[in-house]
Length: 155
Length: 407
Ligand SMILES: Cc1ncc(COP(=O)(O)O)c(C=O)c1O
Image 1 (cartoon, rainbow over the protein chains, first blue to last red):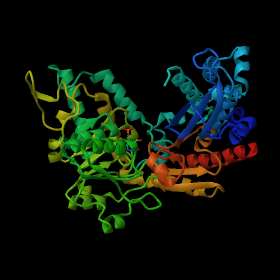
Image 2: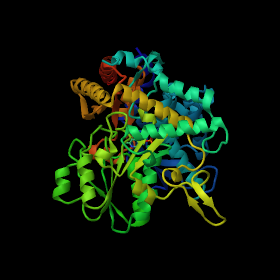
Image 3: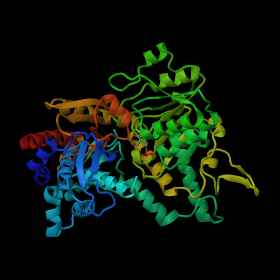
Image 4: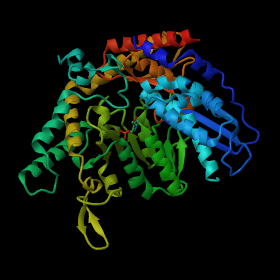
């Protein structure tokens, strides 16, 4: 049955991520808060970020992060993985990771280097087989990219 | 005796196709219907034999095209019991509802006036009136719903929720999340007693049950062609003659004018003043063809068949432990499986060849009313069959086992 295809998408480890997000406690001090909603399915994410405090330099990092996500399994898993993967990373690296992640969702093979950078986010490669679900996996990355963009535009 | 449902199903070529390697079980008819071969042929024949721009030509072909377009208007009029002068051809229900809200509502609404709506309505109805309210200082009033999403008419009467201040009632005849058949005849009566006007969103009703706008005494009635077997980009706004005359056009340009001076112009009479620019002729023709097809089967029979399939699906789903059915009306059934997000369930069904819609269905206030982030909606048309019902029920059971097996 078609459910074989399904098991490539819903891997147990993803369900674990979705059920046990590590960074879902609201931050007390934060620099940016981004709220995104996928209107077609109702997935909602509020992403809070505190940047490491060395303004202007090339070395700004994501110092603290909280991702409050409610929605489907793919979305929740992607949210949880994203937070773990970007925490402590330089903003320029996160931007590259997002680009690589999107490439993967579009079904492109990734260079080893990119795979390494994305870590467990590569567990979501199966989503590319489900075009209707790409938005679910992409939304948390879109949120972090927006937080970075706002920071860089000095908002 | 007419043709059997099995024979009728054969008219829809897409139903023989596959999705994810499985035979397609198309249960998203409330989003858009599939098209019978006659409608597909009518569109092709138009482009092969009759295509020219309408009204403008001085040659025979253009006249023929114009006759086809106007013939479609006539068919629509007959289909809903109206006069052809009361039929505006639009781009769809959304365009029709926007025309009612901004062409009719905007000029007549005053600060403090009330627009009666419901939380069960589609965004295209709700948001248009929200905007019209913001622009005029009018107020939206939400009619009380019972647990099934149906307007509680007794309460509306007792608490005089539709009253002197009510200028407009804007409501779906059949709602798109639960398929609720609203008591619109009573509500229309109430709004008329209050001196207001009823705008009925018939997107989920037209083509699914017999509609007679005169019997309903609807003032405006909106629907889409693509939800009733024709192509996208064509729809209808019916309006009582006097009201259409009072309605301002939203688009200005070619063919809607009478005389154009340097600083101002006069407009044609309704419905032509609303049809600026080159129109969707193939859309109109496909709509006419769909109307013929539906009428031949019979709208009463269609309504009964869709309700039969909807009920069977709801009963089968309710029998699965963990499934909650929020409501069923006609061919529409909305439900959830405990612990599984609707989107995940829809993907599991997708891999089994079953097309359903999952999410908010353009009805966020309704999701809040049901207190869910979303639902899975299966919507049956008369060309679905009992096998499709079984496929859905088996599909949900298999999905349940799959997800529980992962735990
Ligand atoms: C009740 C209702 N009203 C309005 C619409 C809008 O129709 P369209 O998207 O064809 O303009 C829909 C379509 O989903 C609907 O279900």
